[in-house]
Image 1 (cartoon, rainbow, N blue to C red):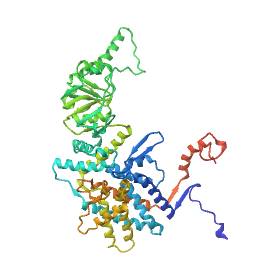
Image 2: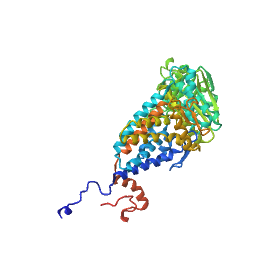
Image 3: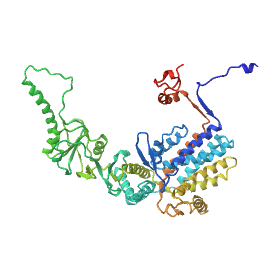
Image 4: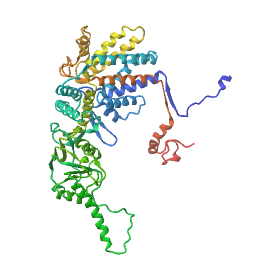
Length: 561
C-alpha cells in the first residue's frame, strides 16, 4: 500500500516530449534514409536535377548535393546531421556531397536490421569505425600520384579530374571546354589559397560556349556620370591608381554652422570646397595614373575632369573586385591622395572596356603578379547560369585539391567496389559478430555503383554482378573497373580518365561513417516545450490564440498561468 502512495517524480517540465530506446533509434534511421532518398537520384553523370521553390518564391535548379540539402530546410534533429556533413564535404573538398549523404544513409540502412534484432549499437559503431580505417588505408594504397609530371601533362591530368566532376552537372555537355578553363584559372592563381581570387561573373544571353576566361580581372561597368563616354576605353601598359575615397563635392554636415560678418566671405567658403576637390583631382592626375578606380563615388565633376585629361575612372567598384585588381596589378588601395608614389600604382598589359551581352565589362589583361583570374559565364536562363557557377565552384575546388594532394583514384564506382571486395575478404578473417557488421558496411559501399546504374536506367543487379566478378579476379587487374554510363556495361575507369582526387573519397567515407556512428549512438531525444511554444506562437496568433479565447490577438502560444 505504501508503495502505491509514493508521489510521482516529475523531472522534466510539463509537456516535454521524450522518446527513447530502440524505437527512437529506428525513427532516426528512417529519417536519415528519407533524406538520402531525396538526393539519391542526383548522383552521377545521368543524375536528375531538383527544382526547389522556397518561401520567398525563389526557384533554384540544382544537382549539387550540398545546395539541395541547404535549401531543404530540414527540421528533424537527426537528419540535420546529414545536412552538416554535406556542408563540410562542400567546404573541405568541394565535390562528393551527394556521395557522402548517400553513404551515410546506406550505412544506417544496413545497420537497421541488426538494431531490430537487438544488437547493441556500440558493437555496430566499433565495427564501422574499424571498417572505415581499413577502407581509408585501401584508398591510399590504390591511389596513384600525378607528381613530378611536366606542366603540360599535369594540366591534362587536372583537366580530367575537373571533367569527371563536371560530367555529373548541368554543364556536363561542355565539360572539356569548361575543364580546361578551370585548370587555367587555378594554375593562374598559383599557390594563393584564397578562392575569391578567381572571380565568376554571370552575364545572361549567348551560349555556354561564349563564356571566356580573363587572365586578370573583369568587372561590370559601374554607375557613371556625365563625361564618362568621353574617356578613352583602351590603354596599353597603363598605371592604375586604386582609391578608397570620394572624389566629389562634399556638402558640410547638417549641424555645421558658419557665422559670417561680411557677405563677401561667403564666396571664399564656397571656393574652399571647390579647391579641396580640385586639389584631390590634380594629385590623381599628377601621379601619372591612367586608370583611377575608387570604392566610393567619383562624381560628375571628377568624371569630366578625368575625361579632359584622357584618364579612365570608375567609382563605386565593389570591395572584392578592388582587392582582386590590387592583387593582380600589384597596386595598393590608398585612403588618401597625398604623396602617391609609383610603388603603390598597379599596372597591366592591356586595359579595355568591352561589351559582353548587353553589359559592359572593364577588363584588365596580362597582370604582372598573375594571381587572379576571372571566368565570365554566359548562358540562356538565370537559373542555368547560377547552376553553372555552382558546378564551376566544385570543379575549381577539386582542381585545387588535386594540385595540393596529387593522388587520384578511379571513379565511376570502381574504388567503392574494390574497397567493398577488400572488406568482405577481411571480414572472413574475423571471428564473432563484427564479421557480419563489416560485411554490411562493405555492402553499403556498393550503393554508389548501384545508384549510378539506376540513374542511367540500366539494370543495376546485372552490372554489379559483372563488377563483382571483375574485382574478384585474383590478379587484381579488375581493381580500376567501374560502371560504363554510356553502354551500361563495365569499363576500366582509370584508362578512360574517370578520375577523382583520393582526398574526395577519403573525406566522404570518413564523414559518412562519423555521421552514421553519431546517429547510432543516440538513444533518447528530449524535446523542450519552450522551444516549441516559440515556434507555436506565430501559428497560435494566426489561429487566434491556441490556449484561451480571452487572449486572442495577443499572439500568445500558451495560456497564461
